[in-house]
Amino acid sequence: MAIKYGLAEYDRYTGTVDFNINLPMDGVQSGSIYEFLRNASENNWELCGAFPASIKGEKRALPPNIRGLRESEDSAEEIALIFKRVER
Image (tube, rainbow, N blue to C red; front, top):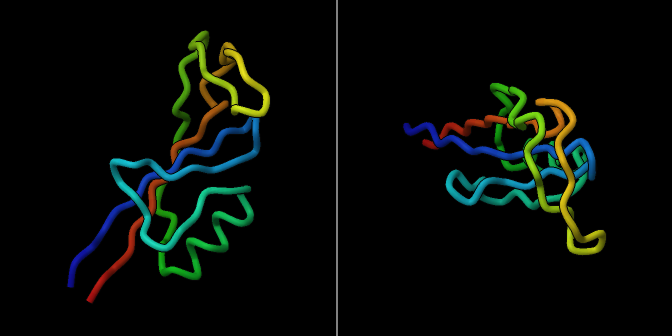
């Protein structure tokens, strides 16, 4: 039995969640928070932690369809989501 961990970032400004390439979540696709959590659950990923991941005043790139940079207004604009999956 092994435990795998995954990391995703929820962007409150865009309303989307993207998994982190350093701790990918097999079988899960980026998308809206609802789609992402549903897809994670269907692939046996369990949410086990969340914390603010932005730095106030940090310049962040906007999605390609919007373009440009945006300054973070608070540390909770981006939320890190930690997942785990038990593999047997």
